[in-house]
Image (cartoon, rainbow, N blue to C red):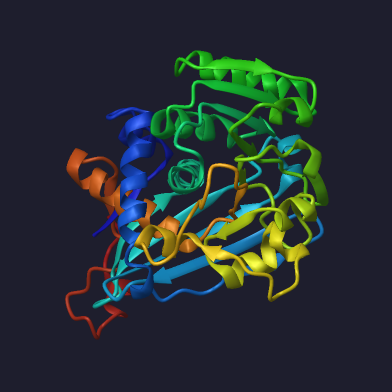
Length: 341
């Protein structure tokens, strides 16, 4: 049987340890898998783009487990009362091909994106970082704030969004969740001023410049997570040129990330190599670092196996007959002759 984890089951799984500890556990799983970077069969995601959005499949395998995620990105969905991102995923056994887990991944993706950001920042931001600016207060913002508070001890947050109701939503949700000083401000520049870390997480599918060189201070770490498809960026190209840039999987980020603005031979560094210890991260206090994150299938692999482990440990979700249980594996037609029920 296949374990099925729906939204309600995932919510119960998260609430058992609490959002902060769930994020920390997911980050630990991610580090473990990134240390095995070379053992994974990796590829860019298969994307189907339209004028208003994208639908993607994201596969990855390590010889024992295979995972994929179905995910969309439709920024205008909020006007229709739908999430801008919706996803589900599968974890399967490579030896047999049997699907072990079918899971919601809309909420899980929000957690995995925040965990990946915090894992990168642990390596790339200055160790004494305490103040963070968030530009873009949509669905991902709370998860980012909780992850950076839990894993990097960020205690001051300045937030900006062109939609003031989004800032109000973020401040309200955080006040009910964690002890963090949250200050809404009137511009991207104000959010970045004095920040050790700046997270850009806007949703518009445009070639935008949310962060410009005049907003960047020496030693800043920039967590750029909103530019995640062709024709969608957040950073001025000169911000990239003045920084040491890190990515998840270079072939994919060249197409989808902020570095799509740079020449194909411009040097960038893969985060997995830093985690594995074969590449250096931040080199000095004054250096500006950028994590140009577009989301990668290996992070979803980590999330799916982590959710599966907790689902089995907590006995959450349910077993479903996603694959037929056959008396004779060669006689599929026999199913048509059985009575329902």
